[in-house]
Image (tube, rainbow, N blue to C red; front, side, top):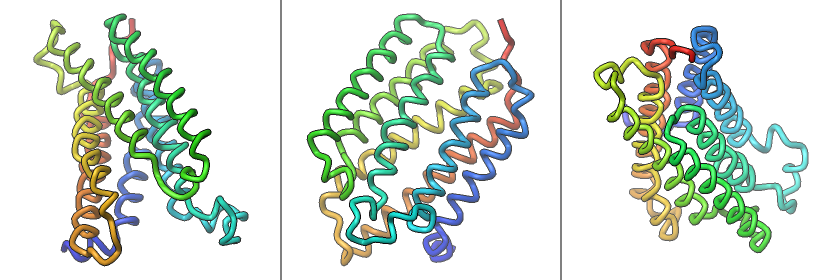
Length: 232
């Protein structure tokens, strides 16, 4: 079973992403006029970012030249996942959260994050095309964990605490909180990454597979079982 998962990890991840995105589009009318619609847009966005990034050389004509700085797809995931996706989730939580102070913290946090990302890329342009930025990944993880943390504080103070499992935002927050919490430590070990270390490669791949399966399946379940948000 594990051998099958490792050999087909990309296809499995893409299938789960696709299923979550399709379910989101199918249930979009159920959440019309709420922040959940923006989340569904994020799901579709993440699916296409991953698909294009994975099959990068087949999609973009200039990557056929191995000498081109665009040949590797590090820049794609750095810009469209590490930066834009994180900021999109911050915008989502600004729509979900009720506490103005928390929303303000996220607003300034996202602004500082974007400035840091821009400066890092401008001063390390070569790195953008050759590897990832661990600093950006860790800062992004902090922002996402703050987002979900603020939401958990919100539901603890909510009068309808016992009905939290009916909210789509609970499933979203739980999934992204655990995903970033599990995946982020792997960034610290990337510096020791070598192709000969098959044990670490398998461990890392396994963690990513099961984390992705958990996150996107949780999104899908949340979209199906959650009740529409009461519009103000």
